[in-house]
Length: 246
Length: 246
Image (cartoon, rainbow over all chains, first blue to last red; front, top):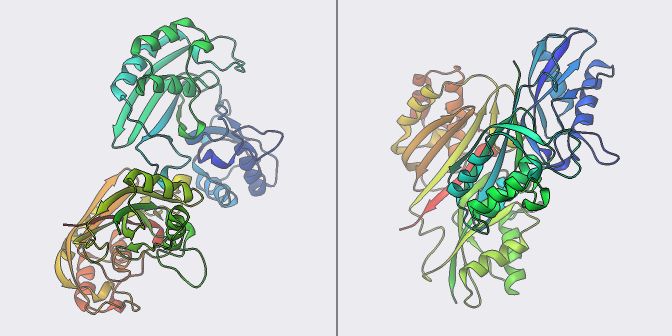
């Protein structure tokens, strides 16, 4: 059966997250249902990884096996037609090798975290950025972020429910950019621990607002203990931006 | 009584437009109600101009007379608290001279019109840009747009319901910028005719898609006849961006 690589954009606001839960609608279910309506067969998608409730995507990737071969654009347009009542868009569909696996073939993942740093939040940014009223020191946050690059024990930023075997992860890059009130963190690595990006952002924010020094941040990171870290930043600022394959 | 200048951002999607209508909720009403809840007196806002149903604002300006003097930040935050169920944000409140008038004191208005030019529309852009699937020629649209600068008879782009006395308006500038799939038109003038920007955009798009040449556009403009122009572009791409005062 032909396998397809599907690149997906979604506004995660109204969803319980990527994965099916006991109640509430999940992104995975909505997409599976759309594929079912198109093919009239059950063809469950396999995502590159889960995203939490409220987390968005500009480039989630999944693979799916379809009962027969269709033109790529037809899969994209037909599934999008069945997703029209959802805040989900199939951006691209490509026919791939049967051994392509959205999760296990991935070599790099990029997330972005958006802050909106102004006294009031414009309606266009509601649910799509972490609104921060007080002025934040982006340079100090970048200084801290530099420390994260490389292979480290990220226990300080690991959720207690995280099921990964090891707290060691490799971060390829962490960069802040600023465009007026929009401050964007881009973070790239092979894979991430549960809540790792949101815990990093929540802790960086302590430095951004001046509660912590850069030294405090480094000490917390070296403590390798979740209790030493700052709070978890809200889901609404986080976007799965890109998943790379060989 | 003290007069305040109020700068307002809104997502116009769920509204019948700025002005009250026989049915549906208007932006003006929602804002008046929030001021009423804050001051416990009727203090109707006066806008710089109307916006159509579905049109957004990054910088609508209104003035309002309050029964007594309040700190500016308090007006902003209190009214925003009463607007929390609306996609409306009071960005700034400034106490002004009693002869300041949001409509009559305005010397310049800027609108932006956003196109999203890609095969599929991301969920983040739904209702916030005109989604155009076919590739558009931005350079050709800019060439046409240059012809509009200056004082001209804009009858070709004037809605039949327009109540202005004269079809003559002065356009200070019309510029396209492109950032990936986002194509943005910025247009500045002292004042605009009813549907003028949307009719200009809808006609420019005929050139962008290759249906019309630049010459066709100029001929239509010179015809001074609405029937010679192209269709009205959808409301969802239009934003009242800024209103300037002396």
